Amino acid sequence: GAVVSQHPSWVICKSGTSVKIECRSLDFQATTMFWYRQFPKQSLMLMATSNEGSKATYEQGVEKDKFLINHASLTLSTLTVTSAHPEDSSFYICSAEGIQREQFFGPGTRLTVL
Amino acid sequence: AQSVTQLGSHVSVSEGALVLLRCNYSSSVPPYLFWYVQYPNQGLQLLLKYTTGATLVKGINGFEAEFKKSETSFHLTKPSAHMSDAAEYFCAVSIGGTSYGKLTFGQGTILTVHP
Image 1 (cartoon, each protein chain N blue to C red):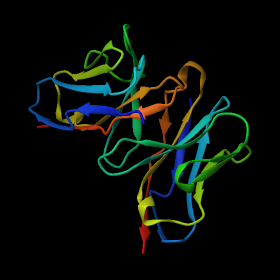
Image 2 (cartoon, rainbow over the protein chains, first blue to last red):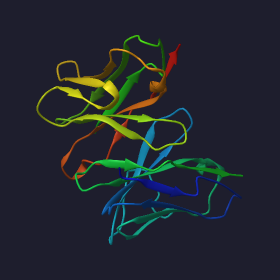
Image 3 (cartoon, one colour):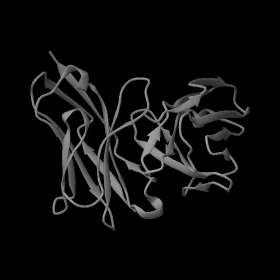
């Protein structure tokens, strides 16, 4: 089946630094990927839609200058959390859309900002 | 806008017992409905989905769900629980079209199966 990977699986950083999270579709091409974040004991919240070769579309309330998304190829989307602060600590999950529009999810990246 | 409510953050059943996980949704347009399962340290895996057509949907691992428009529900059931069913389950909704993949999730239900 289709596999989506995320790297790193967990990261700890200091406040004020930037962190890049990669989302890769390993055995299929995805023109569209989605980024979600999940706070402890809460649901996944859609942050943005990432389209290959174009600008990402952000959901209301998500700061596009803080969460930079780049979808440079059909198998890779990256989320960069710029100038991270403790309130950005969360679980970040991506999904990649397959040819039949099924969503394949990555295992997630846990970000802790000290 | 759409929303999803999963009743019960934790459900515990005995092995062999009926599994019932509840999901209610709200949507201003006909919804597409999904159930996902997440095992520890793994990504969400699609169990089943409803888009159009037959309202009783069968999925993997013996699970099924019924779309009931009048009750705005999409409850997940399995006749006989197995130990391997222990996981977290998420109900999700989208409005289809160009927003098919933009999912709104419920808060999740952790299923525990006792021997």
